[in-house]
Amino acid sequence: MREVETSPAHDSERRGQASTEDNQSRWELVLDTDLGPDAPPGSYVSRSTPLISTGTAEDIITMGIITYKNAQACLDLYKGKLDHFPYRILGDRASCNLDAIRTASPLLLAAICSVSILHKAPGDFGACYVHFKSVYMSRSVAKDLSVDDIRALCIGAFWLSDMSWTLVGTAVRMATELHLQKSFGKALRGDREHYLRARLYLLVYACDHHFSIPFGRPPLTRQCNAIRNVRKFRQCTHATEDDARLVSQVLRWSLCADVFENYDADAGVPLTDSGLSDLCTFSNSLDSLRAEWIDRFQPNMHIGNYPRKGVGLQCDFAKLYLCSHAFRGIEGSDTMGRSQEAAQAFDILTNEGISSALSIINGVASDTEIQSFFNGLPVYFDIMLAFSVVFLFKVSSKYPNLFRLDVNATKHSVNNMLVVMKRITANFHPHHLLVDLTKGIDGLLQRWCVADDTIASGRRIDTQQAMPSADRINVLEPEWFEGLLDPQFMAEYDLLAWPG
Image (cartoon, rainbow, N blue to C red):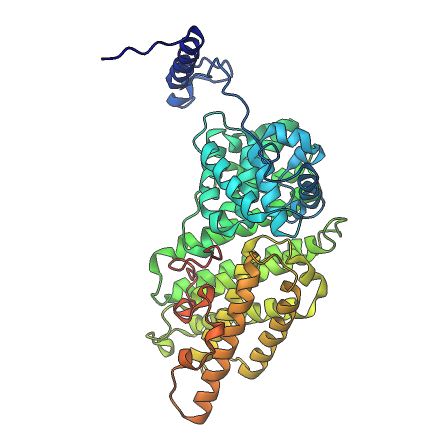
């Protein structure tokens, strides 16, 4: 066997590596004087902090993936516009310059650059996106967690559709490990650091619900004390109007989570009379939330009237989600056998669902300011816009005589919205989700018209064969439409698959 000579420097390096690995694998007893004897058992044991620094990861600028100038443009766009849609994820980092963010978290910088380029900031989206995924994979197993990494994960989840659920899951885990939810009490007592930690947890909660409930997935975050008492967050010494906006969203998602918990187990089964009554109660609660918040917010210097108009739009989304439960299993159910109260509740809920979908579509088609928001809004808005169209298509084609819906007027409204979406997405980045969804809605509208013409003429025809092949894109294939009257309409379909 040949012996390999090693230099003293090499031996020192190996000993350093072994020492680092040894430190990283050790555990220690933590005697925190702030913890009482009632603390969880595991709170006294944790991995020891490595004594030897592992160094700073190369950031997206250092690696030559984006220039300093373009990275600055990305940061300016994100801080000046995008961050204000989801209530300022950056928190106090909004006052930091590019160099400070580079130092704080390479993952945060990569997320900001990727998302900003997707919204037409200068740079190579593909290269930045690949780098973001690479840094994410590294940080997802790191032990030195930071709130800046959680901010990065939320930014990525809100706008990078193919990674949303993965990023949310990691963000929830990191937020839990850092006990962000436990900062709520100290935030109420005026501690600014804990205020920032608590509001970040509320953002993680909202982000989690964006990508769980609409997909039929149980949320990963729970109704903890911070969520149950979220209204108190407005009483924080450091609270701003953005925090009030965040509180209003948490309240809406908390209500939707209650709906999910009450109706998740019986997907596809018609609602009972009591189920319809309870759903009406939820609907009334949502109406109360809308009335409470719709006129609360002032115009924002970065995003105009979005704070107020966003409340209306998101309440319509929530109402559509809620009321769509009333459509469960109606094909095989005996609607005539319901009690008078249940029949009335069914009629109210189904028509409110239809009205909400029409309100979404007509609002987007007629309001130029709302149209301007879409090149900046998180992907949840794109998803719900598409679902509104699919919902109306299914109602009109499957139950033309069961509900009060003017089909021709509805198609006209969808077409008006489609004209608008084609115009505004013409200047979007080609990888923006709404670009593909617009093409899908166009194909669906053609199929819709073919189906109605077929019914009117008494002919039977394969509408998929009749639809031009150019409009058959993967995002909205006809198979995707099946079952979409169920609130778990995205549970079995990967609508968010990144365009290839």
